[in-house]
Length: 152
Ligand SMILES: NC(=O)c1ccc[n+]([C@@H]2O[C@H](COP(=O)([O-])OP(=O)(O)OC[C@H]3O[C@@H](n4cnc5c(N)ncnc54)[C@H](OP(=O)(O)O)[C@@H]3O)[C@@H](O)[C@H]2O)c1
Image 1 (cartoon, rainbow, N blue to C red):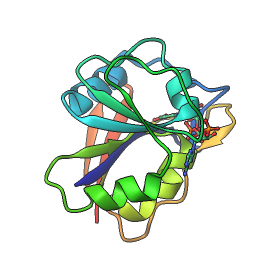
Image 2: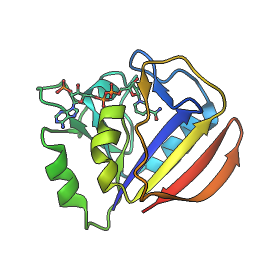
Image 3: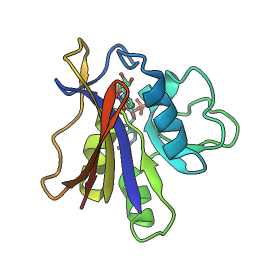
Image 4: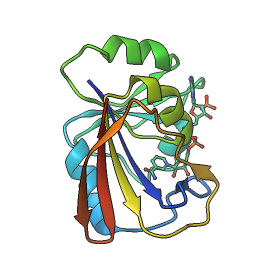
């Protein structure tokens, strides 16, 4: 199964200069809890800006280059091959950004966990257009954000 997790402001901003333009500790905790024990897929820009290794999770980093990785993480230079290999797997592969990876993976995403942050933020990276086949199945109000879940 292929899922995706993202946090987006109401004006669709997800990033600014390589990082997220907000600090919402409950949202970070939600990301940690949801992804713990899973394999994540991330673009090289997002990975390069990680402040530290994501413990308890393996990251597959999509890049054309020979990047320095944290121990246990892997590099992938063929995203579509990776997605096709995981399509029918029971294990949940979690697409974790940034924008270029969400966009390329969109047709493969079975479930999307989208945190919506109230307000408009300044930034340079936007969440791509949702695949219309993804329908909202729930909306949960949290402290400082909402979690909208979409399923194909
Ligand atoms: N709010 C959120 O939930 C969230 C989550 C994640 C990230 N973000 C934000 O998103 C922003 C980064 O997004 P981004 O779109 O600029 O960058 P990105 O998707 O993180 O990484 C882009 C890089 O990934 C590699 N890449 C992408 N597609 C590839 C492919 N098909 N094959 C091989 N390599 C590929 C390339 O790296 P090489 O040049 O090394 O080949 C490319 O430059 C940051 O601001 C970050 O904070 C936000």
